[in-house]
Amino acid sequence: MLHFLEQDGAANVTNAFGTIITVACGGKGHKWTTLLNFSYKSGGTQHTVTAMTDQDSCQLAAAAAAAQAVVVMSKQMTVNQIAHSSDMLATDFPNVPRVLAASDLVAIRDAKGRWQVMVVSSIAADLVTVTMTGNVGAPGFLNGAQVFAYGAPADTVFDSAKFLPGTSATTNFPNTEGPSDEIICKANSQGAPIILHSGNATAQGYFTKVSWGLNKAC
Image (cartoon, rainbow, N blue to C red; front, side, top):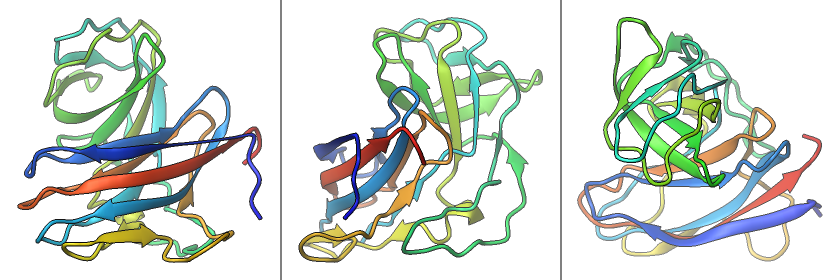
């Protein structure tokens, strides 16, 4: 059996159809996050769920107030460079690293220590000033706030990290009953959350249950 210093989770996370659903799993202190399992409820359209692990990290070079869409990174960030891995799926897929771009996901720790998952809209010519598709949520970001970059669900590093829930049903991943040592994946860095992403197209979906564990050692 797997053993963790802490276990936590989330339940009934959703958005109106046509708006992506994301769950920031773990990412606490200097601990390593392991995504243990999740359940997803689909409507009449099959959704693709991607378990996204961190690809790069930096800090914010300036504070960002709530309701603004622009943040400034301390460096140019790179994604599509660390292949997804898990105890179930350990296949490495060929990939070509690239710089952060429009439609990529980032997670930024806000002033209350919570992760805000944001989608990149555009990047300025200086390569570090990033405009998001939505505004920063309250209470905003402090100067030096931790940032993790993930890229996009379509990136080749996530080819082995996609899950197809059944339609008009709740599907469990891993698809096992009772105690199991199977997991979904592990974060690539200490303190990094794992992002569960659903495109949530056409018919509304739900992450009905998500569970993760935290340890001091990977």
